[in-house]
Length: 213
Image (cartoon, rainbow, N blue to C red; front, side, top):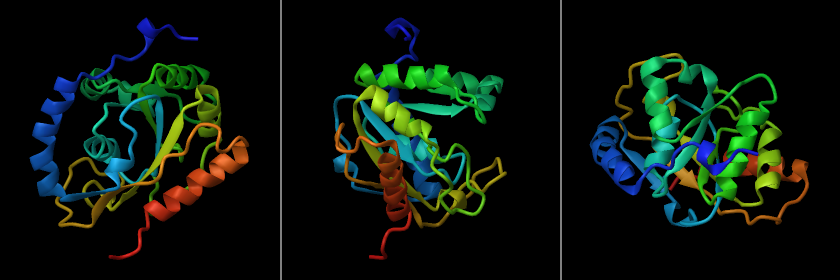
């Protein structure tokens, strides 16, 4: 297993605070972004965050909606882009190779969680082109079982209105963008991989399509 010294660096509270200062007015202009259930996010201890994936801007929205620093698992191609890769690493993200079981990425995620940190995985494994939830990859159940920590789902709504699929330049959404947090699942509540995946799918379908107020 990876040693703590080999893990991605933890984002400091000051770094996160500064990032939020710059991101808040920008996201207000592009959104605004509505956050529901943020109080449900455990403030301490290892936490696996699972989100649906509608847009490349989703990691920014999820981190903005969470008071804890988050380590994001991102596709390896992004880390090969010089500027973007450097920024992602500076905020504690780490790469995963898509289309194959990436044991190194799973190992890093598990060790971060065991170290008491917060890790976000997009369990569909890729962006959705039409907004519908795609098949949940079984690797998330493996991470949850090996790490033995709590899990929580966040349903993202409307992020593709800010940055549509295949586009590089964000645009104002004029509302309708949300990050909705579900109830955390305690370690050991669900022991079977199939049941865990069904729980994730049910949570994300519900949170990403909330009932109208």
